[in-house]
Image 1 (cartoon, one colour):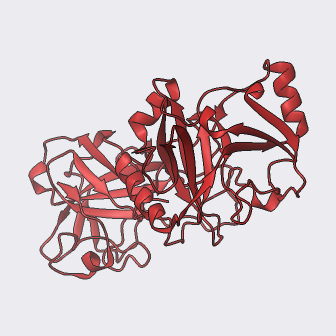
Image 2 (image 1 turned 180 degrees about the vertical axis):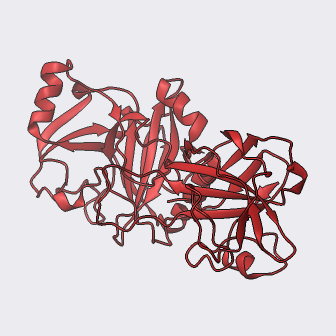
Length: 377
């Protein structure tokens, strides 16, 4: 049995299965004692030693917005337990801004059900986030007061990444705004001159995959895990060529599209996000069939039909490979294998280096209705 999602309607309805949910901010329904056992004199909660204290807490089946919890307890007075109090808090980050308001702790009250019990709620659980949890057992009296046990030990756990189901929801939202398709002929990568000199001198002319940064959705399964090389492919509407400006450096490596994207590669959807701006980014992954990157993506990302999707296509016309990209989103393409500079050309661009457009470690706007889904951001 699950702890219900705690929305406003379930909190206010007297007949809801969540009738005993504690209001986080006002705590008008019940004033819980804290983990040290302190409570107000008029709290309506009495303490009864006979109620068993949860111990040996186990957390399992962790997702980005849910987990299962179970524990052991003495059978003494077990039949008197009517509710469980669950104290859930984000683990304090030592590097957090000390002037920032702390997150409001989440106090959950659930009717006593067989364990393990599922705790689910996208508004108080975020993906890839460390939490602490402690549990009390309680017995609701006829007058509405509670008697409670001592708090259990505090357990730490970390929520998971977006699943394929969540990513498919993001994919569908991205498709809505992708726009019409424009032709492209090359993928390109901008960097500083020193980067390309380093590749030639230290890596035998081959650009090496590196771990993706933490830009984009907080729950993206590729952030901090997938290794690849970032490329762009968007073209200017009026010229059909790559733009001459870039936030990443004044030197550009161009490579013919068919050398990276062809029938021997698979295409995956990786993320959809914005950075408090009107335009949106879509991350795609190109992986050679059977490569380590391909195996990584197969397990975690929705695969796209290379010939028929809303973002980036590769089709054959009269024996020639033809490529198209979506006009209304900025595509960030990750190629998961090394790429030799001899496969393309490096040249200086004539435009400006627009540093403000960089997406390096950029955080997603959690309030954007276009690119967010109903799970942690």
